[in-house]
Length: 163
Ligand code: PNS
Image 1 (cartoon, protein in one colour):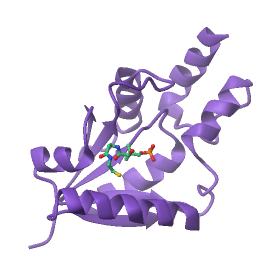
Image 2 (cartoon, protein in one colour):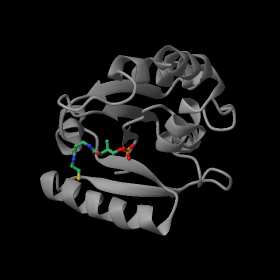
Image 3 (cartoon, helix red, strand yellow):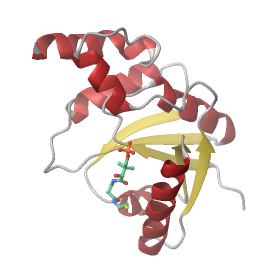
Image 4 (tube, helix red, strand yellow):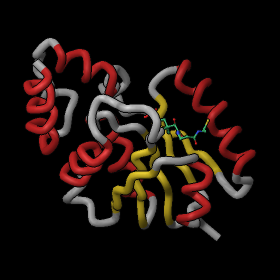
């Protein structure tokens, strides 16, 4: 039987236009996309998890089959709890493919029912990453090409506060 739901996991610290590219393409392929903000409760990211979820929810508002959740544990455990058997990951470079393949193997060892599907970043998105956005934001560079419109004010405000 075909799969109707998928999990798109990530740190989303913060959400980028590259993430939105993958989310919108996954939303066109699956009945439901669960976007999982996976975080290690012992590690502090740049944005609080609640803020990352809030920005994603704003950016995905127009996509009715996308649900955003936060999870502080193993991806494999989340897929078991949500009864999801497909994980979608975006791949930008050959280096990405290598590390993502390793991650897919580990996840499948932990949950043998799981398949990981790789989507190549659309042209123009290969250079976009959350770490690059954080660096640009730190130095006050324009972010509109990299951060979805709905999340721009939150990202700008957070870095303004850090100054
Ligand atoms: O956006 P990122 O930082 O590339 O996402 C990486 C993420 C969050 C998907 C990955 O680190 C992850 O799955 N973390 C949860 C912990 C886990 O399950 N680790 C085992 C997989 S190797």
